[in-house]
Amino acid sequence: MAITVESFMPDLSGRVALVTGGYAGLGFGTSIELARKGARVYIAGRSESKYQETVQNIIAEYPAADVRFLPLDLTDLGSVSRAAGAFMQQESRLNLLVNNAGVMCTPYEETKDGFEMQIAVNYISHFLLTKLLLPCMLKAAEGSPAGTVRVVNVSSDGHEKLAPKRGIIFEDTNLRDDYSVWARYGHSKLANVLHAKELARRYPSIISVSVHPGTVKTNLSQGPLSSTPLYRFVKPLVELGAPGPRKGAANILFAAVSRSLSSSDNGGYFLPVGIKTKASRSGENSEMAQKLWEWTEEEMRKRSY
Image (cartoon, rainbow, N blue to C red; front, side, top):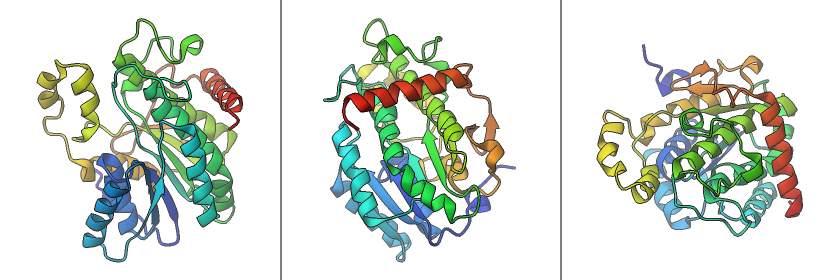
């Protein structure tokens, strides 16, 4: 019997959640369900106009929903730092962080901070955001039932199917040479898995997991459609029978709020819906996870974050 969202969603009154990219796709599917169950939801993203449209849609269904906008540009570490600061001016506690926003298979481009776009948006900026918000989450964990303060990294089975076989390429984290847009995407999604694993080791009072949401019909496919023209012929087959964002967010929501998760699941990787499984060989590599954390910390220090 399939697990439905309604079967595991508890009352979330009094909890504070932050969802990156929460006004579109899986982020919207996540945000509206969290708000429906009573959480105060911060939707973090670049477009306030898209946020306003999303709020109207949520309020139309759930008039009592408490949804707020947090300006955030994941292509700019300065924006990430400002977003964390703005959040902490408004809240002292954070119960749930969903690192959801991402790009897929975009042409090679570097951010102003010098990182390849996919690993910057999908992993590095989320690492910094998580790091800066940790005091709020640790404070929340002190006064909350065990296991209810969580970080969910939205990864992909691409971390296994598409990433370089050696795992994280530390000598060329931007994958400048001889790598496809697909390999760069898988590389960034592997980083999401390793980040959750190491976060769980360092901060056991917070449950940190990564998830593969499954195939869902969202606008994320715009990346491969532009970088890989043949993908337009494959896309209908890939998305055949796939749910939309509302149903497709089920695995993210399960990881975020299901009471069935416990400390034994910390650092785990979940397939839809709620199926804990082994990540790839690289994704289960604790030494690689620790090395990636240390590398990222050093890159942040170089840039004074």
